[in-house]
Length: 518
Ligand SMILES: [Zn+2]
Image 1: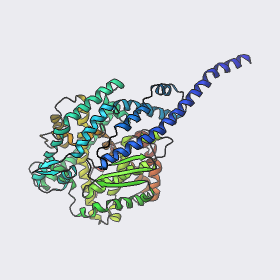
Image 2: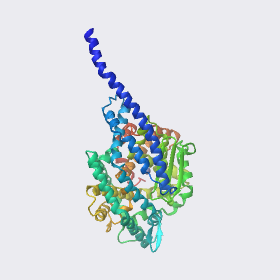
Image 3: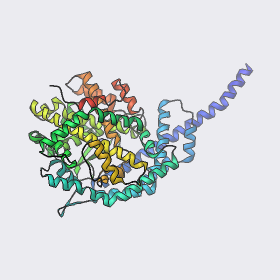
Image 4: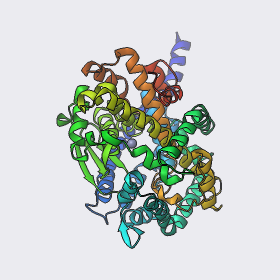
């Protein structure tokens, strides 16, 4: 009896203080997450004000410094690492907090944030000169997508290089700073550290790129032949690709920009998602990127910002952003970090779940009033456009991985080489590499758009398997419960396995790029 009591006393002498210690660590973690929630709300409100042009000269630097101060608390980080957590939710929150702290040391570095802000400011103020006209980014993109005059398209494509002359050197400098910071604070190279945070692994990712490229090669070559004969050109050039893919012919009328938000809301309502009852606002204006959705407060305040594009592309972008907005409105996780640190390719994939709605038979015929033949034309054009778009994104992403191997190399030459390899057309001049805004402000993000296509297609396939071709509020409920409510508790692969029964795979994406059987 005594021995037993003694034993219990010995055990208690450790367990009780350990548990008490863990409880106090948990309490601090709760408090810190609440602080982070408020600070990130301020961060996103500021970023929104800058991006939308409401407060061009605002800065996220002060609030980022306050976020860093909450994360970079050495004593707490030590206690957190040593805390004895049994609960899987607490364990996951710890993992995310520690990863965010390392990220704060790298991407939150004050000098780096300042440099990036100076670049993005120049990007948003940039006007591209063609024949003494000064054009915005949106205008350049509209020329590339819709201008029948090939010479003008060539000028627009070449004008993209003007931004590299302005920001290229500073982007290279930012790349070098990221590499140096990663060397100092992690055991892995910057690229791998970033991929890991998103639940991705470089080798597997590049295998997916190769599988997608290889498996769709016959279709892509067919597309290049069609462009050649459709545009009556000897040789397809980079400024023909986007134009051919955006030219919808007669069906384009159905996708008017001023109706796009109403149509987006109707498509969502078919699934039982009522935007008039969600905390989401939408603003359409000139910005330096396609669109963005700001998770100011999960479930309480979400803002969409979209560039002024024309035609189908605009409706597609708006639907994609509405997918993010649903995700941020519906996220149902037990703590802020579990929503805030959702896996990026999954979040982008939910954008695609909504964007892909646009190309479904019943949506094109019922919501847009197209005939079956016109619907088929839109679907086929989208398939061809995706073949090209996907290669463009894979090229930009592969270029970025290679650029980080040595940012001092000749990036103009590297960009031309990688673009030629993926696009299958000769790109002589890569001096427009900095036109892709992700290299400055969204490092190692582009691959997530490729994975998002895989996620979107896989979710659509699983949903169709379950509900057939007609989707309604019951389908929406399934999508909401299995996907839109999920944050960062599981990895993207784990979410796919649990809800579709299969690991994340490029198979459904590849299938969708094959011609539709008649
Ligand atoms: Zn997105």
